[in-house]
Image (cartoon, rainbow, N blue to C red):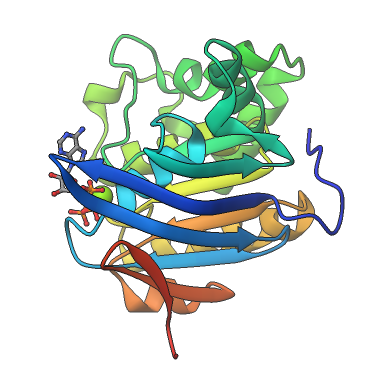
Length: 227
Ligand SMILES: Nc1ncnc2c1ncn2[C@@H]1O[C@H](COP(=O)(O)OP(=O)(O)OP(=O)(O)O)[C@@H](O)[C@H]1O
Ligand SMILES: [Mg+2]
């Protein structure tokens, strides 16, 4: 699945700008993220972290600059190619989970596999369900899940197609300490096993410390943890 050559960055954000209500939210923001690297992004509520992940995934379009993922200029790719490309190469864990209420847990996790046309579906779902301890929930509807269970289903859905780039928006926000540690371990494992890059947006300094690099989103730019 991973089209990434070994040395080129998985994700490049080049002079990225995003204006909200005539005010610059992201301003000449630059980032290069290599394979096998986990980046934690911290920052105040409203600083633009979710917006940044939406831009990096091609779900939102920048007002300035470029988004390049695995050599593809995502910000210049027309729809519906962009959506199809995202479905194949990017995994997204949404801050509010975005599970489809009318589908079971197993069907929710299966969505990226439909979009990618991948087979061995049940095997992949079972493997991730075991890793995230949600096997017993596979037949349930999302409304019958706790917040932490929904979060783990959302993580399984983001990983099931083995993306080159995983973008996770507060992926441990609803989890207890044990489950949070398990998810962060899983991210570490897949980063190396799948040769992928991961961005974790978090308010939790302990979660951020488990990543390879920590940056802060402030004033529309990404700043190093220890300048
Ligand atoms: N589509 C939109 N229309 C108008 N304002 C928006 C839109 N998307 C985001 N904003 C605004 O942009 C700012 C940044 O939002 P964003 O969700 O990126 O913040 P965040 O850093 O993820 O915050 P949190 O930590 O609370 O999740 C906020 O002030 C938000 O209200
Ligand atoms: Mg957010």
